[in-house]
Image (tube, rainbow, N blue to C red; front, side, top):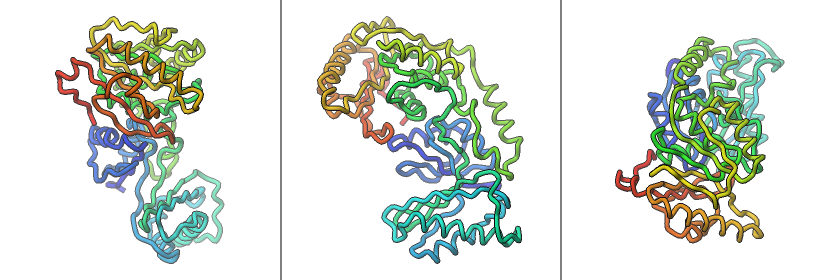
Length: 384
């Protein structure tokens, strides 16, 4: 298992950001499609990817890719794989199935046939008729798309958005992975002041602080692969040590979060403390109407209320109009707003320089990007 293909998944719309991250780690991207990126790595790449990828939902080891239109074909293809190098005799085998526009569509049958094939293969090594499955869990995904099958081993365990710092949150929290993607799409760096006028539990600014400090997002959590018998312990020890050494605690940048709700700010401060970035973010109780930006230029990124309920739409339109008028006073500032509200630009008062379709959970949104005059002079360039 010196060279392997890893399969990193991401929310729709941020695949290019993930691709850039993978390339920056030094790996060769093989394919980028809706919702995932395939790339070549070595065994240590599993540890590095889980530790450092900020926008990936999970990292899988791709075990196989084949066609199957009958259960016999599925059984034979699954049995042919080298399961004895991947699964121990007491491993708990969990099969997750998905089928889209495929001849085989019964998920329960796909799961049972796949597991039966795996156990038949394991019998050739372990000479057992029954497997206890009392050990470490190995979650295997058998995903069908138009009769094509991908077999994937989950190396992450809990989703990678589970950084371990968010103990408190508001009613509609944004995933940490998406928050990181929004910061990267805004092309933020530590030289630019960054403000979130409706910060909620602070996820956007906390992720920005971690980027500014070069803090690995997976540093304070565990991963499924750490329990795999074939994963050398030294890989994760080395990767964790390198990640700790890479943190720039002396980094200087300006991050400010505002919210009118004092409970939200209490949550934000607590989350920032648990993330280890409390000293790098200023939190202030303040309504959007009171927002004043003292710096000559900078970036504003926010995830405001969307007005999903009909009775909230008038309030949302008033809020978006207020934000547009407020930021019209700061033409050198760039503004980035994610919302599902279809008429945001009309309320804001101008058409975005660029917008990008994204999904916040299952909600289809657009990321409206308004480049300030200073940014426009530099070409208004973003990383993706």
